[in-house]
Length: 401
Image (cartoon, rainbow, N blue to C red):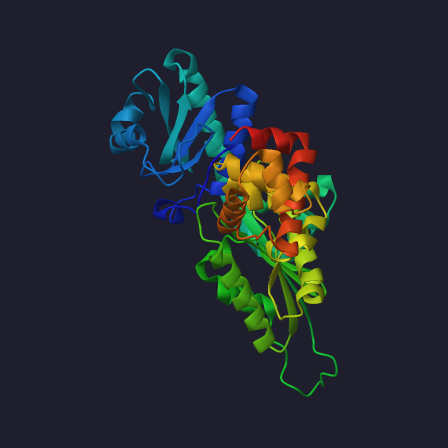
């Protein structure tokens, strides 16, 4: 899968669009079985199917771009070493980046040249279509088809969304706002604030590349980018700011937060997060009786009744991952939960001292944040273990850290 991030400075003035670039490189790698990397006009990686991190400098590409005129005279095709071929990429006739084909130069020289021309034409088309798409597309309708449409509609929408600059190949989290006018509101009162204006202001510069819109009469959705290394508190804070803005604007609003899913299959990933956010927004007020926002991971044991298998596996891994490197603690925990929460029975089964069992349980609490000595913590950990061990794929991945 192609790797992309937000466009570097070099892309803001150019026409390479990260979302279509990802699709193009994925398609080329799938069809030709060749790994590619695409850079901008400064040699910064935009997309790659060769595990080159987006935003880093591709050293040989940068050198080629420095001598672009000489490379043009030499046929605009250069190779470095014996592990890749580097070809200049032109958009609208202007050198705008480098396409790298990873492999033996003798075999890939012509392939790289042809692929570079194809990508240049495709991105030229995408750049023109993007400007038209931004003017004519309805973000709410695109989101509706992406998240709630048929499989065919979702696939077509993903392509249109890429043209409009929505990059679904990065990990995203769904935030759902269920909003309605307060009951008994009178027409002469101050008009309700426009939700799209509220969200645009809150998202700031990211609004142009963040998928968000109204999907039905009382529901707004935002698909926020969230990288695995980023603090979860940023998502939570944004959701709180969104709810506060809606309330200040005269709306009654409930906000739900989904979970992040790796975008191996981008449409499936955002749909799962969307369904989780809906579930959290609907169930949270009944369970917790507080204003929210509500997140799936904060619903306790009820979260394990989420509407999809991937959601339940995600939650189970989130709970148990800290125990992966502590097999003795995990074994004690599993035995304890299977022994009706009896320290004495657990100690007897594992031939451990009771004090050791209690230490392991305390350690499990420290690592997971869930106390197995309480009913709520024990239920969540028990459900997490059941989800992992009952799913063959999940069990295999858990046994192979």
